[in-house]
Image: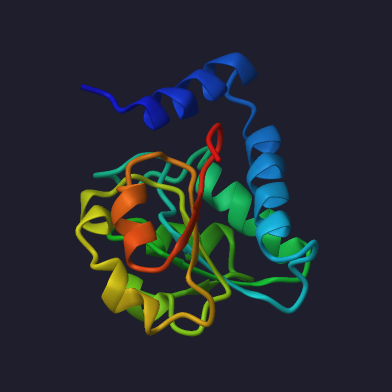
Length: 162
C-alpha cells in the first residue's frame, strides 16, 4: 500500500502534469527555506539521479532537474545513485558525483532524497548524522521513515507535509 506522503508526491506530479521544472523550483524553494534563505556556498547531497528506482534512465529526471537548479543557484551539489551515475555525469558534468550515499553526504548542509531506491531507506540515520554538517533532510519521495529520522536528530521536511 502506498503511504500518504508518497500519495502526496504522486498527486503533485499528476496535478502539475509532470512539469519537472516546477517540481525542481518547489524542491529548491524548500531547500532554500531549510538553509535559511539561500543555497549559495552550501553543500547539498542528492540521493538519486534516475527518474525512478531500479533503472539507469535519467530522461526527464526530476532529481537531476533539482540538482541542476540548486547548482545554478550556487550550491555545491553531490549526486549519488546506484545505477544512473554514468548517464548523469554525461548530461550534467558540472555536478559532483559519489558512488556511496554515505560518503556523498559527508559534510552536507542538506540531504535531498529524490529517487526512492530501497537502499536509501535502509541507511541508519543516526550513523549518517555524524557525517553531515547539519542533520536536515528533504524527503521529496515520501519513502523515508520520518519518525525514525527525527528520533535520530534530523529535521525532516517533505513536499506536502510539515
